[in-house]
Image (cartoon, rainbow, N blue to C red; front, side):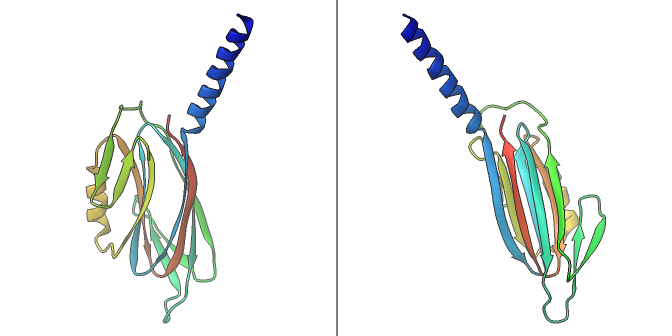
Length: 163
């Protein structure tokens, strides 16, 4: 009886560890941005997400600076010789809604099995219109987006927890 009880305790411990570890997800993606590129970071509302963004401007045909436009309209010029880094944290903002999946025209792809996502949209000419359409996305998703204008290597790496 004692061995059966110990076996049951061991099964419960292993099962809980598997459940917790399967809740963590990572992101590691990059693109070479040219012209205007929107970077869309999204997550399920119940998930936590923290990413590091690295931007390394590239000099081509006389273009020397890269401009970032953040969601609040603030712009930052990045000289061609610098390496610009910042982090974005999107905290959990609600309970798990149960089974769901949201796809929005190649902009957002979030589901229970994939609660965090990063997408790059090239030739994003009307950033304000884009931000308005992002604001209308389902409330079960949190979105952070910014615009990169110029030529730059953009890398997004991070982790999220879906609980």
